[in-house]
Length: 294
Image 1 (cartoon, rainbow, N blue to C red):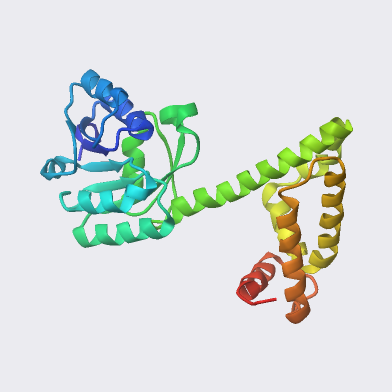
Image 2: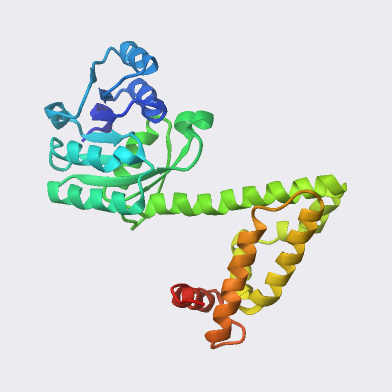
């Protein structure tokens, strides 16, 4: 199939749908648009492209080579089911929603039964900042074809080779766990340092961490966590008291302390089998003991 002549349906004309509609149209693709309640911005885009906006999925989807689902996560499975009721065999369905990994896997199973290629497509940044250049992470049957198609419109797509539906959104969520956790901790860290007048010196004291590869650093934290959780829980408790005394009570550290105390209690009842575990051994112990009551 000549990708330049491909017909692409876009379901949902919010910020994400419009983000891809305009550059795809400019790149020469034939578009089919769908939005139950089109906003003025959606109607303006459709007028500029001289296209009709369908109110709901229907038989018109049979002409689409690819369908981009750009609705909300809550609507994802419903819309996927509707699309699959009309999509032709071997068409592609790219799910750009924020639906959970479980929902995306369920949608993928439905797609297989219909002979449709389903691609879990996670948006790995803020659309409002980088628009079509916002990085995408794709997994599932047809991911490489989707990459080829979208990159003709200026998109940036990374394919998880051998990945399955659910993998891309799982990695997006895990990345958010890390970045949002670091964000909350950094807010508390820097406000305390600023209040004490030692922010510049703090950056210097963190320089050794800055010189350590991220993977090595987080692996080290987890490996040593299962050895030193009890001692570190006391350190976290003391640090929390210091911040409170500054009039900056922490919202993050109480949860951190509970994490360390939980590990310490489980170590008392289920000790490590090795004195110096590697990352695989540490994770195995944590997973094995996660469901156990302290």
